[in-house]
Amino acid sequence: MTENRNKAEPIGVTAQDLPLHCPPDDAPLWARHPRVFLDVVKTGEATCPYCSAHYVLTGERPKGHH
Image 1 (tube, rainbow, N blue to C red):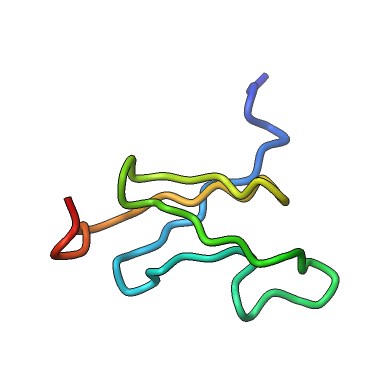
Image 2: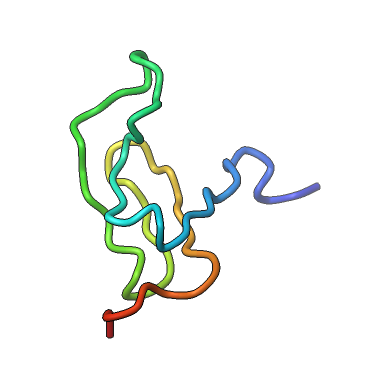
């Protein structure tokens, strides 16, 4: 039995997806909530406070960020 059975898989994002916001532009109308910008650069991951979508930064971090 797996503990993460009901949890959604993390959504991978790259530097080209920044600035990251949720919901994404292509989200269906039924899945929309107020747009919130998420900082995935600092820790490499972020979770949306509205829908709990979990984003993970993959690949190289964007240039010019600390």
